[in-house]
Image 1: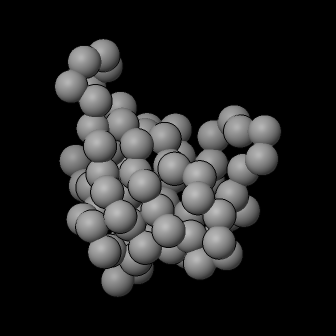
Image 2: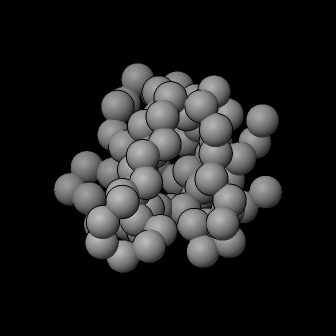
Length: 76
């Protein structure tokens, strides 16, 4: 299931996700990378739907997802 914040769907801790697209980043995670969600932090101030998802990527990287710029799907 491909998700976005505008659809109101957020992963839970321990959900498995696959990255579909990462917004501008000098050293992005590659599309197709998979990982396990560790935490979801939605910002209380600023535009609705903005936040970060902390992921333990299977490739060893530690870059967070930025919402709503980055796109992912929940796979398990």
